[in-house]
Image 1 (cartoon, rainbow over the protein chains, first blue to last red):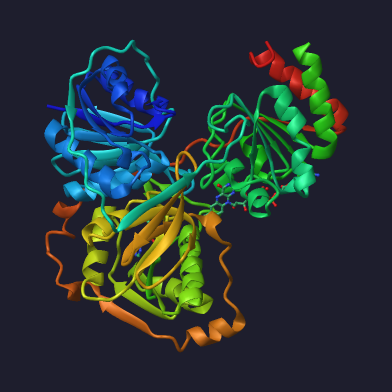
Image 2: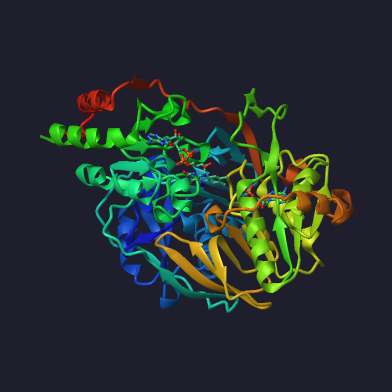
Length: 320
Length: 261
Ligand SMILES: Cc1cc2nc3c(=O)[nH]c(=O)nc-3n(C[C@H](O)[C@H](O)[C@H](O)COP(=O)(O)OP(=O)(O)OC[C@H]3O[C@@H](n4cnc5c(N)ncnc54)[C@H](O)[C@@H]3O)c2cc1C
Ligand SMILES: Nc1ncnc2c1ncn2[C@@H]1O[C@H](COP(=O)(O)O)[C@@H](O)[C@H]1O
């Protein structure tokens, strides 16, 4: 019998959309699901997980678990996996999930697959699709071993089917003891009232073509007009023209907005890997052969400094 | 402070990658050190420059991986260790990590560094599995380090909510995000010196591995094939005066989407 254990994640104390997507998909596949909630002050979300279909919710709630910690989280997930008897453990391909997935799999003595974008379950056979080679190829793989299958899945791979909360059947896990070999010193959160890249319906990104920090700032009025997040290529972040949190791409943030506007970005494969899933791409580049045009719905061959004022004017007009 | 850097030789993903009948075409591939592994080597060099000690680069693979190791020596690594085999095709991360664990058994090191993911698989599974097999603490996706001593190091990691900061006891393992540092290039002098640096070769067969591990029964993850996704869009290109092309594009956007509704 198949059963999925979903490893939950939280944002501001609430279940993340990614977690809800995984529970939704389990329901869609008709496979029973359990969930494991690890953190501080997270027990209250058990009912939300139950509403989304989690039959048993394993909870490890303690101050020592407030910040993600590889060793204690691995122990809690492995414990929940064993108690639940799940045939699969599903995680998100977040920074936490990427770190935890292989460690949990190795702890359980099995293989793992990461950054999965599609899962097919046929009885005991689990086949997945995932991008590789900087998204130049799609790899199709299957778990060959018996026993539990551990995989991390990219956000947005499954649709979210939100449901009202209901009373959860919870099981408290033993809180793992602190492992002195890895001590958490803190987490630095960059306070900002800027719109975050992952949530924004529109992303306006700047590349080396903006020429410097002043050039990068020139894109801000357009982002405000469009309610867009400001993105950047690695070249811009490495040069210090914008902080690294703006970086879009394989190492930076992977975005899938309704509209992606690329200004002075050449379109290196590692950048495309982070934005080519955008619904509509508009690119401005003075080089007609720039690779970014291959993924653009609308390519404007021209100078971004001339295009920017025209963009602002057009948007103002169209918004009426 | 002795550091082992895991190096995977991968196809250069910036160049054309071909698939034939679901299989990767190796003919015409240009083999390089994966981008993230280059940063891991850079991090190791910065650490030994700060705290002394040696950097050993380690790679499992056929004879060609010695080119990657030789390049790492030219960039500044002190020693290389080549675990030689005919091919690693079909191995999964579990197997690779198991072999690495066996290779490192009985060797001494303070820290193992690796790229956050290999530039071909984009998996990021092998180093962490290795850390589990060796029972080492780990911090992945590091963007910086400080307070390095023989017994511990402070590591900054890009986490989900911001930068997470950990003090890790040594020996331990870390994987490196490319934003940590710009990797240095090999100098002419480095290339000359690399020729005299030690390259130890260990045959896979001599490791005394459990025969079942690398047999087809030992494979946990079977890759069925690769496909080339349709990346190229049938987009439209507009050339000429921006004052004309931009409003044209924006009008088309308005007509075809609900963005300005
Ligand atoms: C391991 C690894 C990971 C990486 N991860 C990422 C990542 O996450 N994100 C990322 O972005 N990159 C990443 N890169 C780097 C990537 O390979 C490129 O180097 C980078 O994306 C280039 O940035 P760019 O397009 O801004 O700069 P360039 O390639 O220099 O392009 C600048 C473009 O601006 C155009 N231009 C110049 N002036 C103007 C003007 N006035 N008007 C209009 N156009 C103009 C030029 O024609 C050119 O096309 C990674 C690389 C490696 C090895
Ligand atoms: N054959 C190999 N030899 C040495 N190191 C490897 C090998 N395969 C993977 N690694 C290391 O593990 C990292 C992650 O690989 P992967 O899990 O495939 O993404 C690579 O960047 C290397 O540092």
